[in-house]
Image: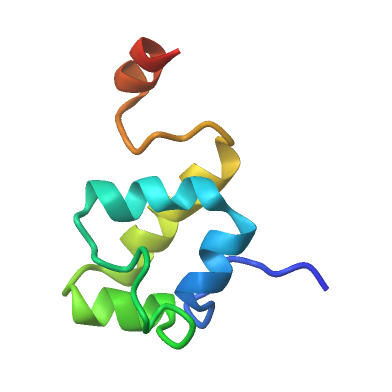
Length: 82
């Protein structure tokens, strides 16, 4: 069964399915990468814990998923990295 991006998706499943989404967490300075709670914390939990808008976080993660080579920067940053 293919997983989809949703508020109930756990952080570890997000990273397993779409490794490029780690760039979003790094850019936002979220300490979720390597965290022992990643198998349990959902994206909804992350938004609540870091006091960010859930819809905004999901939109940014969706952008990262669509762009396989996402580096977490602006479009101009991504052009410079190529």
